[in-house]
Image (tube, rainbow, N blue to C red; front, top):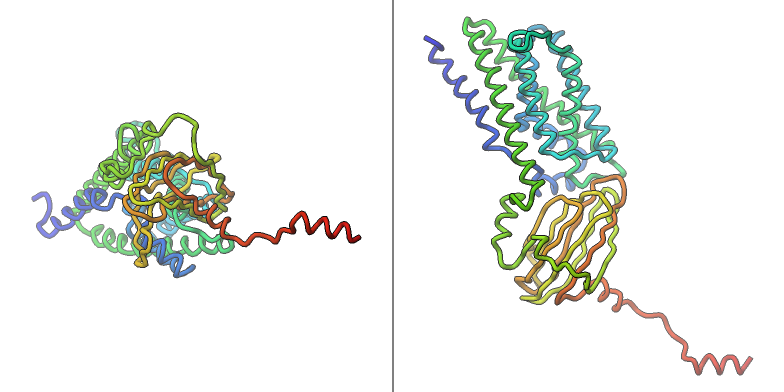
Length: 390
């Protein structure tokens, strides 16, 4: 019999592991996670780091591959420390310096790292390529650096504090290590228990070939996502974007924006480093707005949305949410209220936005300026009386 009946559960688990990315495949952090971080401070960073590692199937698969054939505490500590050192250095440095990498590309490389470690486990270099395997310790450190860039990409999606930035990063990284240790303990218990069984050789082949298959599928999925987000004329950026593109209230197709330069207003907006800012216009229901904006180079997270007039529940309607250095579109206001943008700058330097708009709107910044009290002005006749009296 190929496997004893009680081992079929583990085989089913491995198959579920291979299918897991289809269920949890996503990028970015939820709004609830972001708000929890803002409200909870450094301890929330620690908790988020731990939960992120425990749900990071690609990172866990890589760690599982590392420890698969390690049987002594010394060897386990050696290679796990190398991986920890690698991802900690790049996580801290990249976040502190504001270095950002396209998350689809970095996750595609992480997927290949899962394939690599499993390929090394089955002695693939010698068996299939007839070459010596690269130095495993050096490769784990190097791949750890890449994993750290992926973790930093996630962390930089949060509104990090400029004053407590280093502490935020350290707490998040400590959380990552806590989650990694917890997952590692379970992996070692499973492997140690199975190592004593006659079926361990069969199990190891299934597990490592399964990791190669899983890594390959993840790589294809990440490259598919990268193609979608970098070819907007061919693909929609997300399910949200597809839903919005079917609406007659909003269009984000740049080709539909007027090509002339007769804009009503050109506004320059500076988004401070590690901070966010809003700019809103007032539109009546059915009012039209056409816009285009561009940064001086850096990509910003933005949410183009509207708030109904008189609403006190906190409701708002989001028309477009993405991360980019420019955007253009048209809006037919579905309700009377303020409509505009929230930009979030996660880089260490201020970013300048040039916004051009036209349509049936009222600028709130000009309205606020008009409502400010004007300085007292002395009439010309009074000035003449003063001069004649001297």
